[in-house]
Image: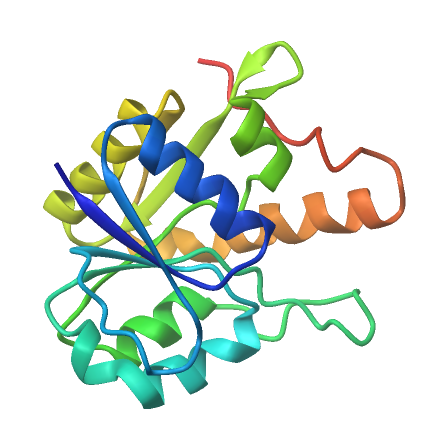
Length: 190
């Protein structure tokens, strides 16, 4: 059994926690403050991208040696018209640089909470795309996701996080413009 610590208390954290629990694994919800100790081997940062630096500053030493999952889409919330990371980078790569002793993954950012909770996108199963440089970390997260009834696909190295963030950004802008619903989204059909 795997323990997954989820930092953040929004819809995404709840949906991811539901998948973890459905697979028979343990989920612990942790606030953004440093009051509660992180016990999970996998830590999901279910927070807005701008909160990551605060978490790293407060909990960086606690995250060393753990699988840390960045679910963020680093978009400019004031305009909703661009990503705020360099064109050749990603928020996940910035996180990996800030946490050199952690195994940083990018996942869940191309999913909406409703599609994770329903485990479907339209008539298709929900798929979580996972990018990262540590194969064992990706496998550990994929096993938790699959045990919870959701597909998982290895999207490649952490450098692929840039493309995942672009897809997540596109999906968010379509939902905000009401071109797709928050219970819809991009499905991977293999």
